[in-house]
Length: 373
Image (cartoon, rainbow, N blue to C red; front, side, top):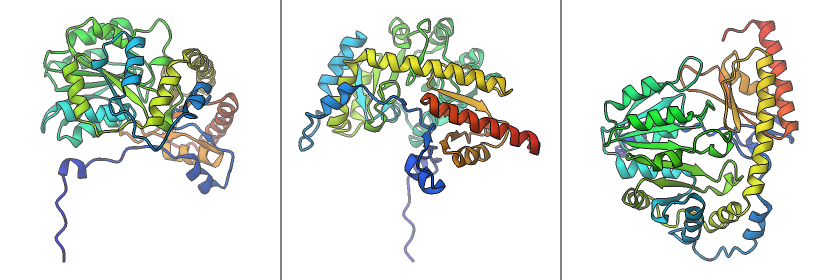
């Protein structure tokens, strides 16, 4: 008998990432053709028409620019940041992996929020780090006191998404200022702003505040959400200094961002008006959905994203099956302590109505069966 190959224990023990169900699988399971995919926080309005026009000039026989020079230059002008501090990745998820590879050593400490984005834990653990989880408050707001206490132990990295994924709230200006002031010199703050564009105008720009600080930081953003390029996988990181950005670049694979993604991202940046228009419609629908859920007596934390996090009142897998039977894909949350929650993307108005109708039916069933939460 062949002796089993010894695997990297840090990777072999990783939990699977909860990616959610795609439309093709949902159709095969339900037999339905009309599926409302509300699990992955995609932009229901798609991407700018300028993207399709740009992709018409794509030559797929040529390698993409490994340095993403044109896209980095476009972002540099938009953000007012030197291009040598910008790193482009195959989605902001790759940036999370790159910063962990660049900074962490085995047995380092990483602080992350709970409930939180799974890769804020999975990627550090893949590099042998130990995770310290900071719970949000009972009403699912940021616990600034707990966060500042955790920072006193000088972790290698502090991961936080604002707006929060999966919960939705964003740090107010004074909260973010307090957090920045609490970050020690030897700690890297990774500030994940994947949903930045969905914030209200009065919310702080994390990159702007961090640029005025003296701490080490990485700000993560993406073209997958507001810009509607989820299928092309392109995100970026802005580092506090060029040395950190270079280390992150070295931690990536070459030619990691494909040519189509680079062309599409540049075109999307040239049509900010289209993006802002689609975001405004999503925000209006988000408000309508939250009000409808609240009227049903459900707990819905404040959201400044394109999704809502709902305590559904039963096990999330039961809720998932119910919604799927009605042609709606949602994301059941499986994190311990939050297994009665689902996350639902704000879709087109008709899709949102479909979700709300199914939600009312589920609520009626739970009342009739008196199913415990």
